[in-house]
Length: 298
Image 1: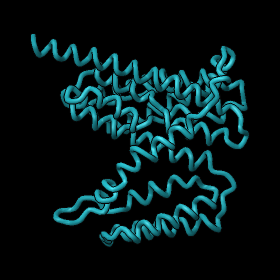
Image 2 (image 1 turned 30 degrees about the vertical axis):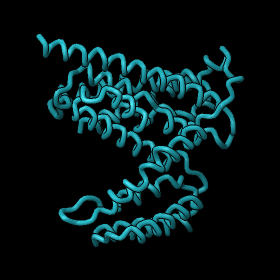
Image 3 (image 1 turned 180 degrees about the vertical axis):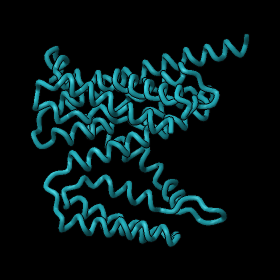
Image 4 (image 1 turned 90 degrees about the vertical axis):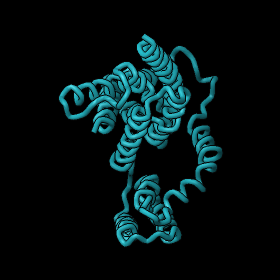
């Protein structure tokens, strides 16, 4: 419940801040979803720099929060950035998704039917007007995972794809979405409402949204702090949630790709604030771990 509520706050507050800054600029409003996403890989990457000092429960909290966050981003893509829907191809997409669920219920543990149907689902979604990223999510959710004494196709697939994703797919995805001309950077663009909205949304909105919503749910008694963690550690992780990078760049690109405008502003805002959030979160976590170590010594 804690990461779910934290993710909700980390999406609502950044979106509200962006809309508040851009409400008088109609052409910029379409980018409201850009600061709502957290980059799982980079946020966990920064947290992993602290090795064993990070409580295991705190790592799980950030991982779960980022997953909820990304699922929310995917829903936003489906509802707000999917145009010209084709019912003719949307219906087969629903049927294929149901077939994947049926295979899971029947405990089919051969990868081939899941992958073939997943490719078909991707094709149908791509041409139906719905962003096809959801095909990967649906397929992954239906592939069987761990079971007592049984072969896990999900673990097998994850193991085989890990190297390709880490060293090939993710870098290309990041570089393709991050590319912008340094010649476009000047004082004017730095104070553009889109850049300011993204910057304040990711940096200020994420930490306020995640931390305040978590504080409320913990104080209400519905949840508790991750084991062996402190409020300062939770705040440091809330800052790391401002690392939007790949997902924020993806959402920003989707928002303005048809007009082919403001892409430089989106990329500049996301990259600057992702770096700032990483540095700020790391600093707070260093202080938190130092205090914990000092307390243990005392």
